[in-house]
Image (cartoon, rainbow, N blue to C red; front, side):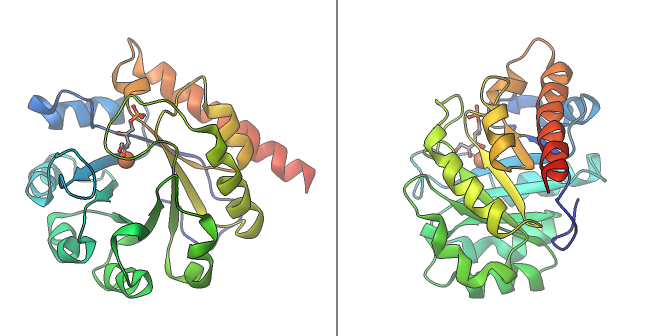
Length: 233
Ligand SMILES: O=C(CO)[C@@H](O)[C@H](O)COP(=O)(O)O
Ligand SMILES: [Fe+2]
């Protein structure tokens, strides 16, 4: 995965497995990697922070040996994100993306995640202003801009979130900026133009007849936008 301190970070496509066939999750994950994914986005929901319930670190622990080289981005939609850092690190997670709305000490949590050996992601719900993460921007590797209200796949993309992506790309050219929620072929271009480089897409990929074709479509949109931004400099 791209580091935090490099020129414009490269394009990474990370399918969300939330709406995949969870009865054979390891196979679904392998298929997505074979279809060209760069990483996997695993949605952890606790039924408190969001009105839905999925899975936790025991699943990651079982997936890891079957997918030894896959980057797991854990989207922690949980009330007490501090509680699961060590378990997720032990289970083999690579990135721990917590919601700033779920903690009253985000900088301390960033340090805790770093000390556990994972990359740090900070996620913002649609209603949360982007400037609140500016004071501790040196403590995280990825900013996740939710483009739906978290909790479910298959929702409608919120295009007014693009101003947050643009703000971050303008002020933090080297930051990995992730978008998540309703992202697919019909919404990727505005994400790419705003400056997102880590692309989470769930139902648009797992519901597609040809996931590989959707992944390459998302990738070409982002790579074109990166090229264009570098020419314009
Ligand atoms: O975190 C979430 C939902 O809360 C997302 O990761 C969704 O799972 C993405 O699914 P689509 O909106 O792309 O179908
Ligand atoms: Fe997610």
